[in-house]
Amino acid sequence: MKLNIVPARTGATWVKLGIRTFFKQPLAMSGLFFMFMALLSVASLLPFVGSALALALLPAATLGLMAATKEATRGKFPTPSILISAFRAGQQRKQAMMVLGALYAVGFLGLMGVSALIDGGQFAKLYLVGGKITEEMVLQGDFQSAMWAALILYLPLSLLFWHAPALVHWHGVSPMKSLFFSFMACYKNFGALTVFGMLWIGLFMAMGLVVTLIATLLDNPGVAGLAMFPAAMLMVSMFFTSLYFTFEGSFVADPDPSGEPTHTIDINA
Image (cartoon, rainbow, N blue to C red; front, side):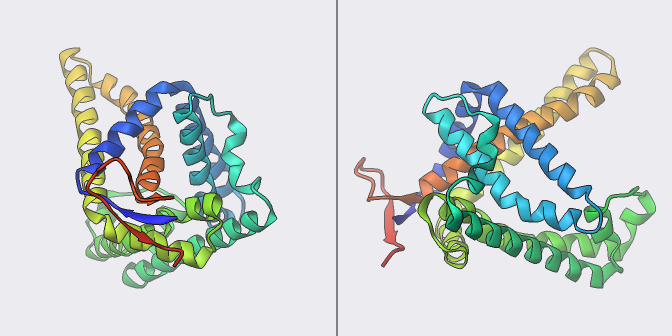
């Protein structure tokens, strides 16, 4: 297996492939995403350990959606059982995925702990436990500082875990090595990931503008409120569908023979 270094424009290809694959199996992919959300929501409701458990399940659940995308690219209909693919790949890989989930939970709770040092835990409590957000709270300087600190710290955490579940599941890479190779792949392909992210931000903004425009033309502001949530969920479903292609494009078994100007680095050396 080799790390594939791609040009920045490849990020746009990943977005297109994700959207195209979603529309090959729109009912399956959107349904699996809602099941993914329901699974994490139910886990988070458990007393005392709910939030930590939901965080620990996130890498495995995300891998399930990537596996569903892989099935869809083959023309197959992904069934709900594919969401637990991470726990059906043998004892060794299941344990590795559980370790990865525990590391993610510890990392995320750690960055929330840092934010709690800034505002006394207001932002962390709101994010992890929920509650009512008020204008007065949002306008507090400490709350805003805690929010930005959490966002900044989440960037390196997300890069560490971006490809890690797929590396563990499909290539049997150990949890710690998967984190290293995931970060290196994101670092080497940062241009492509930046294009990927910016395009998705632009698509989300365009979706919001379209919904608002339709509500304005109908002279019914309530339409925007009713349509915004399901439209946003469909967009998020497409985003998660596209994640598989960022992995597929970043790691290859052999150098690309197509003539595309890419470079590879052997990560097994």
